[in-house]
Image (tube, rainbow, N blue to C red; front, side, top):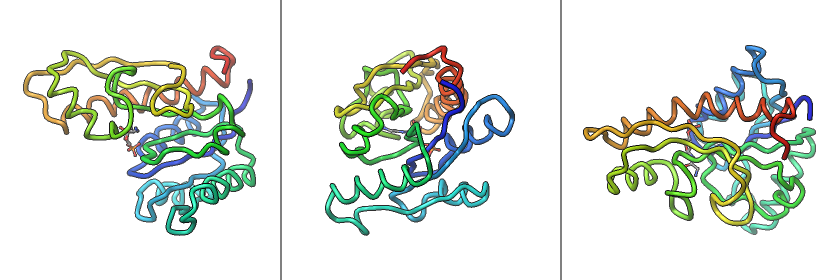
Length: 199
Ligand code: GAR
């Protein structure tokens, strides 16, 4: 496949975004961070992009109440920045159909659990870890997968497993999983760049 031209969608702190940028800077990932888009003007992900000199935009339903227009605005911004692969990095909104169709099999997500378990609508961030703890699971982890029209449903590209301890809280489990996310996401992207994973 060769060098990846990445466009990010992020809603939160952007620690996965940062891990991917760092891997690029360290020469571990053959990619260019082209643009960062957030639906949340206060997302620290946008601040990280500014610090790294990556073009970034706040694009949300406040600007585009019509979801098709929002989808189109995100797509056009990705295209303007020559993106070839879309990376969801803590993006808490559903991705629009136009973006998905244009970037068919080229939209990736990271989910903080071992899909197909603990996925689907409403299963994001802390809600995932809460459900894992309530079910008494002995293991959890994270999953990088392709995005399709159904929440957390597309082809799984890679997973990392972590133990769940009896005294875990949502915070302690989230932190253990997040540490693995920061390793897994750049690794999977590099496997795509190198051709080891074919999308
Ligand atoms: C990560 O744990 C990511 O897996 C999760 O949100 C967090 C974002 O952290 N994503 C989802 O739950 C998506 N359904 P970050 O903003 O620090 O990368």
